[in-house]
Image 1 (cartoon, each protein chain N blue to C red):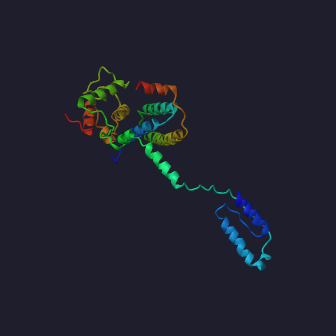
Image 2: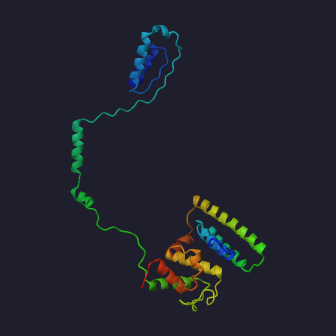
Image 3: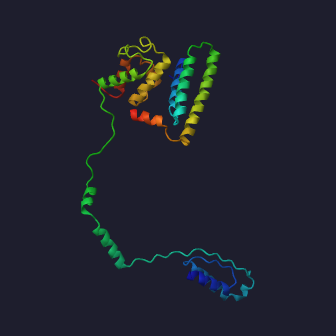
Length: 185
Length: 92
């Protein structure tokens, strides 16, 4: 506030081009007016319009005294809880990763047969590991694509088309999945 | 595999369209797209006219682009899940 007041006073004294900044650059403006005083001749040539811009004064934070710093450091040290500090420092020795359930050939074949039983175009009575999709179960190539897609969703990996067209019985699929997932028995 | 017979091409297209249709965030669009793709391919199973097949293929590729675009738009402006979908998730 005092900075602005100073500026207005300087403004009324010198009808020059002024810019009032916040507290810190105040010294600059005053110095400018000082230099102008030294050349009174040129003052008349200057345009006698005044332009002021007021910016909000900076909030000056007072630097903390040494006493304050001491107090604050002691407060932080006092609140340093030894119990929690111990827990934090010791790194946990076990790491958790996410993993798929351990696969066996038996489990794979169970899952394959379950998915096929849920497929409504397949007769569950005729379904076993050796039944051919097209010849025995009466599916066509479009249904075969859907079956392969269901297998991809079940086991979570993509089966390329070149491999897919060779998988024509559930037994083939079980063996293929076993090869992909490195399940050997 | 790079040299694809048209049969392989059609099957690959079927799979791609089904995969893209399942990406719809909206339950209604998803079910409609999956069902429509399935029915359309089933309907045109036994076609022999090569020109007609070519036209149908072009139409299918155009629809695949539509599906892809609408999936992205649906994901941009998605709404809450329907009650039916929550039941399906709970059943699983």
